[in-house]
Image 1 (cartoon, one colour):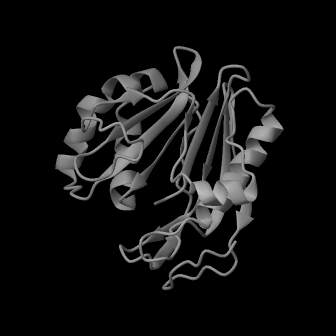
Image 2 (image 1 turned 90 degrees about the vertical axis):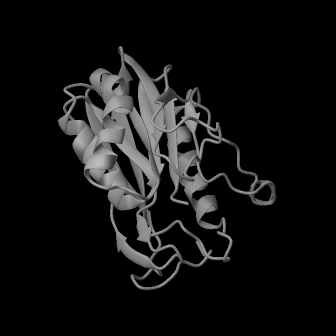
Length: 221
């Protein structure tokens, strides 16, 4: 239930990504804190995602080796990802979001491995890369939490500062969204990544100071 939120704005020619930093066991016990952004400044583009962190990290590393541009990455992902999964025995499911400038436009793409991970809810075929429109948010907070806080979904046409602030607020709500066991799966630190045609900027915008390796995460923010 990693927090993974992306906005591609044609109006601002920019992409924003907001993620948390907690890696954990199946029961939610924290194993490490690390950025979930695989930045490729030369393109510029980012690979991020949800699901098994070893699989995600391995796939991101190998995919970037096999492409020379973001356009090429999108073109080869469906062919190369199953080969990577087989080569490195990546049996646990994960999904990838590819964010960058495709044919000069800010765009988001989604691809998943076989198994249970399909956070966009399209019932997508494993290893089929799909454009996902201008936004992708997950996990989405409950309607009760949204109503109680007055949260408004960020819009790609909002002003840049408003988009960034809304994404930070969304991360706070995702922290307060429990898994089935009542604990959170969002924590460590909150990272805001901004991709423009010329650069990638990464900032840590919040830390959940109470999170500890070897422990589970509370819903406190």
